[in-house]
Length: 303
Ligand code: KIV
Image (cartoon, rainbow, N blue to C red):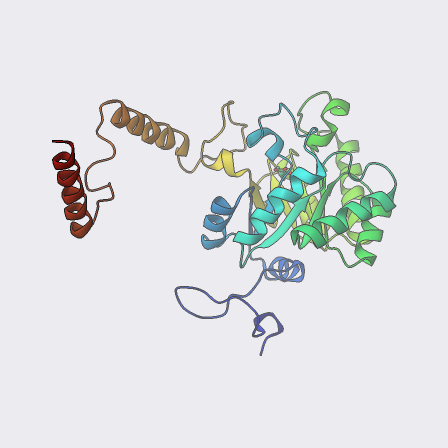
């Protein structure tokens, strides 16, 4: 029996066969085998359940939820408690994918001990199976790894550094910054990170890092040569209200579908076409007769 198929593991509703849970070591194995890793952001129960059933390997409860779910202009405002709330919802939905929680801005920017304490909350209180942190935080990555918490690093365009970067700009565009990015990636792997998100970097730079790094790279705006790819759920389905970035591929126009379904519902309500008689509950015959008899008796008493 494979250790990943132990009896407590979930089984597929359709086949009854055990579902093999995706783990951080499984991602490393996928890199070794040259098998691309599919990843997507996730924020709530229903969408996570659909993504898990669609076979996505890694679901990231991204702090992008600050923008796409909560409507903030950047990711900085979202709190640990808000991220925990969404991570719990995702965790309840997911049976197979690896659930990674994004540590929000401010939750690991003080001492490494504070970062560790916050990361422990994601594992203990929300069921996260790994945490993601942006930037080069070697001491924290070491501490988390020693505390048995798998870490996903995030380098390149790191949205929590929006003010330092002066906007969302492609990073590592010179030979010197590309060399530095590779050195940072190797240092994170050396400190124990289990995977690395590379965001907003030239294809050639991501390809070079992917080839040298012992851990999987997951790209977003980093070209096709990474070990895996991640997109923001709302970008993939056109549920955003801003022009899409160059790297986004929109696979369905759920925004138009949802808007038109809601318009249709509103029109039906306005012309009293919803609900129909078939969509209404009815009294049982005996109760109808009882009511009619009571009504008749009432009329007779009054007469
Ligand atoms: O928060 C997020 O959605 C992310 C991905 C873009 C990698 O960090």
